Image 1 (cartoon, helix red, strand yellow):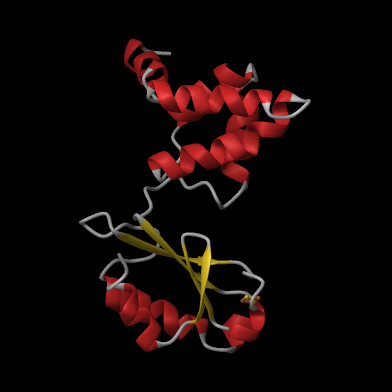
Image 2: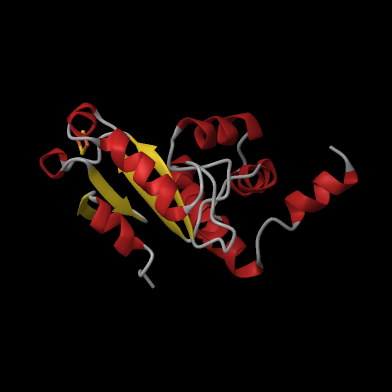
Amino acid sequence: MTPAAALAVKNAFTPEQEKALVAWTKKYPYTNLGLIEALRSVQDWHRQMTPAAAARVAEIFNLPFSHVWGVATFFPTYTHWKTGEKRVGICRGLTCYLAGSDKMEKCLEKTLGVPKKKATADGKFSWEPMECLGACEQGPALQVNDRLVGKATEESILKLKDMK
Ligand code: FES
């Protein structure tokens, strides 16, 4: 590891964030059980997962980097691109696809002005297709930061821009 990379790992988190990550190592009888939630916190703080952050988590959990990075690259919850503050998900599961999610993807791109998996210039929004959100009856289902918004329509997508 280069000195710059080592510094990035060392400075990946604030002291408060470090404390929160250490707390996840103690929450469950087995240290590893807190890893998913710790990584979730990292995603929330940084709006993305970087190798430096994962390496610091590996140190805190006393796990090999390859293990932590394997988890961080397996679940779509963790992104390797920076999400917007409002992370918009449009379901592309079969039911939602049949209900027109591909058209709503185009609408999101046009309304937010960015392609999928890219944050707007002000960092406020990003959007991405997601797998079944468990709300097939509301297809095409739309969510913002893990909260279901309901059926995606041109109107509901336009309203996203008014979200605080
Ligand atoms: S297929 Fe879209 S919510 Fe289930």
